[in-house]
Image (cartoon, rainbow, N blue to C red; front, side, top):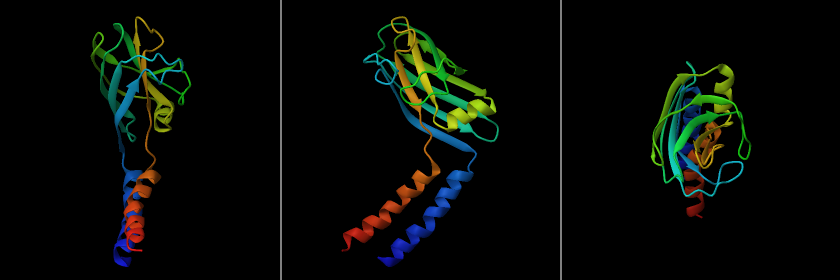
Length: 166
């Protein structure tokens, strides 16, 4: 019991340091839906996205899909700065899209240091605009996990092992 706890505690700081020092940040499974716009649309449309950020070069790649929208897509963007429940008219990245009520979107571009800061501080969101909802039918907040949260997850097995042996 003590050995496994010590191993887990010794490895956790290394994993956190690796996450913190990495120049590539990947955020997968960003949920995009009608409940997240500032004025929820309650659309049954949904989407999913992945964002890959090279923090050294400030190059950002976004890819995703959407389906079930109430009308044709007229625009798609990464907006910021804005937290959950906030609106930003500022476009960080325009997204190229293919499809009408279902399809895909993508972008690949270097962003400014200011815009990179908004993204890394989880102050950006993907917004899919349609004819029925020109301010955005579905939205997904881009939440960058903190390195500290990864370290805490690694500590859980140590506590679980210790707890189960009592």
